[in-house]
Length: 222
Image 1: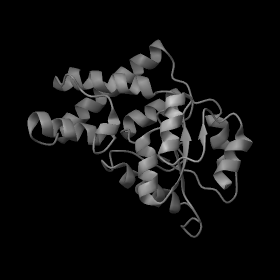
Image 2 (image 1 turned 60 degrees about the horizontal axis):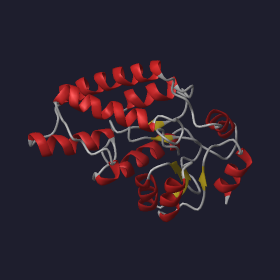
Image 3 (image 1 turned 30 degrees about the horizontal axis):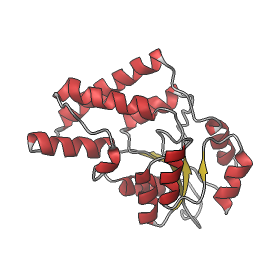
Image 4 (image 1 turned 60 degrees about the vertical axis):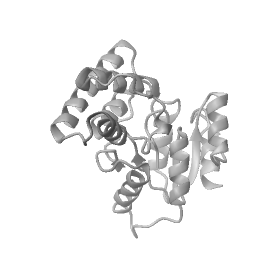
């Protein structure tokens, strides 16, 4: 089970910048803390809920969410035009390999909204519509998104159950959600600070990329 931003696509910074700008453009929300680990739920819907409750004393309505999503995706498209989105090296080959491996099932679970998540995947050359996925449209909490993803991929498999589930992510919230659900966790980071944070959260393995597929598969099977 893969996260998207920072895990499959190298879009974390662009996503954060566009999300914060959209909040300002659409709602006038300034001085938004970009450290998503400080929010109760590090997901697009979860962050928007917290900001609306704090600044307007209520939840966003469907029309406001839709307006935010439209502007956010438009900003992402402009960002991708200026500097094309790219996959984490080796991500496409790894997904193709896993999809062809008997005994494995692949899914995605992202804190992004589906509209922005699908856009980023496609822009980075990772549009895999056959892979079951869950996004923050379905829930605020990362754990709930992951559970929905697991339920969706289980429906595609004979028997509908798995010996184990491994989540691959780049954020401390990913590691914590995996731990809360009893999932194994593999980290993705290429800077010393990020690697250290993921190890501190319990990641036994942290990869900078997926170019060494054998090493990743060994960690997956460990």
